[in-house]
Each structure stands twice: as structure tokens, then as C-alpha cells.
Image (tube, rainbow, N blue to C red):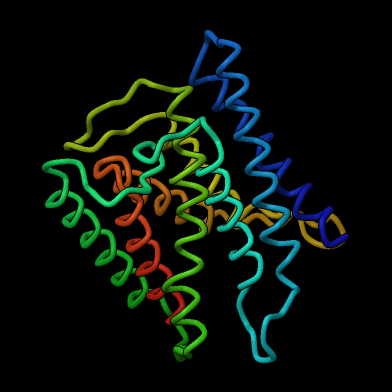
Length: 241
């Protein structure tokens, strides 16, 4: 059952996503259906590998899912560099930022992190101590892997299908941003566990949906994945303090 529960959870999450996908576009071309199929397959692979490999320990005192995140990161990078579907600009895997994007990106990033810190200190009832593994995992591999997959690949695939965008205070809001963020939220709070018990955590879904939107806006505005990774890492580090 190591694989079945992650797979069933991912399928349920996609079922919830389907109405939004079909609501966002009426006229479907053959190429659109092919891209959405790739989107589904990659997400299912991410779900199964991330959770299914979580039990493989790389060192004795391991607390976090290093194996699952590492394998999915490699999967994402392999897809980006071997597939002809996406360019480096579309995935954000490039050195340069879009001209004029640095200042608004930094302002949004700092504002979102400040909000996260405020929420943490206002509602955190118990304190926990940082340890080296937590800092390393949450500040690096966890954020890098998730951003490469969700904002680097999945968002870029959706952008090829849902091309219309709305300018919101200089940031591009699109169906791709909303759908990928909703899916990210569902992965954090809509999960099928052992015994076919469905765990629904609305707070985590909404909070992760918000996180996904901010990360997507940062990536879209700069056309670079780095701001999204930095934001995600800081968000994780504050939440796991």
C-alpha cells in the first residue's frame, strides 16, 4: 500500500481540479489535451514518488523526506532538459530576471514573508527548536523540489493551455496560476490515508493555496524560479521554527 494511497490521493485531487480546468477553457485543441495529459502524468509521478519513497532513510537520525524530494527534483530536471515542451524562460530556470521586475518581486516577497512571520507569532501556541536537518531540508531541498515541479513545470504547462492573463498591480494573474496553486493546496490538506480515511484540513489547503499564488506571481513576474524558491524556503523555515 506504499504506492496506492499516494496514487489515490493524487487522483482525488485531480478530480477536484477537473471542473476548474474545463471551466477555464471552452475550445480545446488536440495539443491542449496532450499538454494536460502530460500535466496529469507528471503530477501523479510527483505524488507517488514523493510519498512512496518517504520511508527510505539516508541516515539514521533522518526526520524529513529527503529521498522523495530528491528523486522528484531529479525527475523535474530530467523532464525540463529532455522534453521539448518547455523552454528555460517558461520554466524560470535561467540566470536573468525580466527587466524591471527586481524591485516589485522583492517587495512582494518581503511582504509575504512578513505576513507569514506575523501569522506565526500570533497563532503559534507551542515552540519548537530548530535543528540542523530542519534548516537544511526546509531551507533547500524541500523548497527547490516543490518549486521546480509546481511553478517551474506544472504552471508552465498550464500557461501553454490557458494563455490569457490579467494584470494585477504589475503581476500576471491567470488560470494557470490559480489552478496550479489550488492543486498545491490540495496536496497539503486533502489526503487519503491508511484505511481509506480522507483527511481534509481546510486551513492548510487555503494557506498553501495562498503560498502557491505568491510563489507563482513571483516566478511569472521575474520569469525566474529563484524568487519563488527563496520565498518558499523562508516560508517553510518560519513555519517549522
